[in-house]
Amino acid sequence: MQWLCIREQRSDDLKDFHSPLLVGDFHLERPNLAQVDAGTQGLTYRDWYNIIKVYNHTNLTKPSDKLPALSGLASIFSSRLKDEYLAGLWRNDLWSGLTWYFKPWDEAVKQRIYRAPSWSWAAFDGRINFQVELYGNRTFRRDLEILSSEVTRKGLDPFGEITFGKLELRSTLRIIPAECIPPDSIGQFSTSICIPNLTTEVENHPTSDVTIYLDPGHADKFKNTLYRHSRSVGFLLICSEDVEAPEKSSSANRSANEMKAMNILREMDGDTWIALIIQERPSSLGFPQSYIRVGIATAYRQCRQAFFGNSKRERVILF
Image 1 (cartoon, helix red, strand yellow):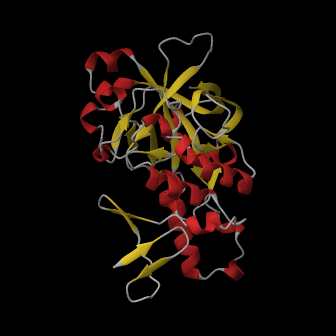
Image 2 (image 1 turned 180 degrees about the horizontal axis):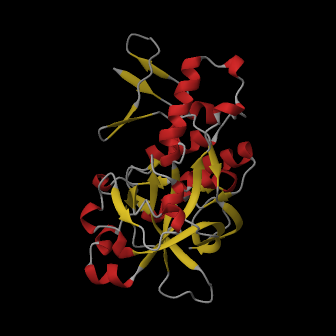
């Protein structure tokens, strides 16, 4: 028999034990609530994401409690991280927090009531993941620039229920017709997207293999022929892998095998990138370049230039 409380884990033989938290058929790293309760200064954004991955899989009696139920923890993290709380995410780590996604077989759902903007995980229920956590200690260059943020709260609690959320962002943006995404591949691990009007520099790369995860409620829309022929989607670059060039490293500090491994990594994965999939709102309502998030995309071993071409950095407003 085993016991778990906020401070300790024990078994019936009085020995300490550690077991991963089982959610569905996945093992998650158990949030260190004792560390939070002790008021440690060592809390990290990763600790927050671990809590969110466990929390978002639970069922709430009252759906509107999604953010209020986390209010106490968010308050502690805010004081430790010295950061601004934005509908379940943190401003200084927004580039990482925005990489949340749901796998198509996890049966995640979007609540009909408004709980959070499209860019927040709090608008959905289901087993959540974060793309950046898949890469371990790899280093990413943050392409996404946060120009401004706005969150309207329903009550006095700065970490509670909200009625409105908006981000003003700037990054490389590529707009393509929705029909470029094959409908029979939606929900798969990856799909080959035909890139129209490539520049001459990348004309030898007519397609790019991209992994796409559409947010709950959008996959069925993209399978509708009329919808696909009448809409377009944007890929807004969040971050791209920054692999250290071997020539910049001190050969005295690296073995021949390490140098060889780094060269292989640069060749295979040096162009890894993660992007938000966004779609223009039916009505801009006075906001030019106004979008909602509809999913996330990443490419593991494809040239970033082949996908984004000469796309420019654009300012977008995300609701």
